[in-house]
Length: 189
Image 1 (spheres, rainbow, N blue to C red):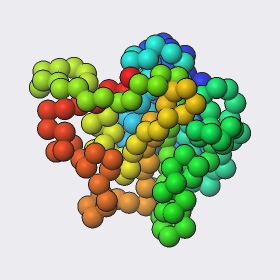
Image 2: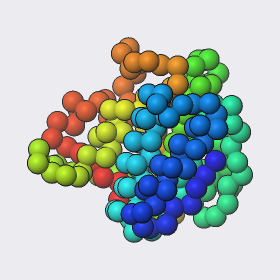
Image 3: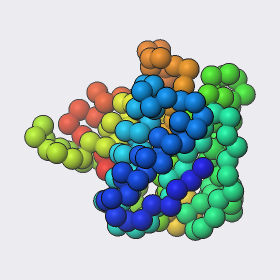
């Protein structure tokens, strides 16, 4: 499922409502921890795309039991694979996890693709700063996350395992956890 995002801060609220409605349609309650976490991750990634690129973006949501929808437009697909939207094509480890881990079938994947080719870069923010912690939050909350070039832009993705109640014993996410960042935060530009 995907939602086109305009470069307007009001789109963040629309993206959260859209994600909630999709989760409810699959029987994932709004008060379920997975739903609350996913909506926060949607907020962070869509905010980064809207604020730091000033360009349209595409929010994609892959839910357990849902088949990927055909994509359209320039911000869709994996590099070199026109029209491909299967998470396994954009993250080779996803197909390996699905083959060896039954819980991977219950993985929720969120992607935000934009047309800016600039990679996420670290920002140092002070304790009083009101922003600049978006990707540090993603790193703490997601089971896995990363980014890759997509067409002339990029896609930032994260995954939540519905069956996992805690991340204890789970492999570290992309950056190894918030402690790896100390005073650094990341912004997607």
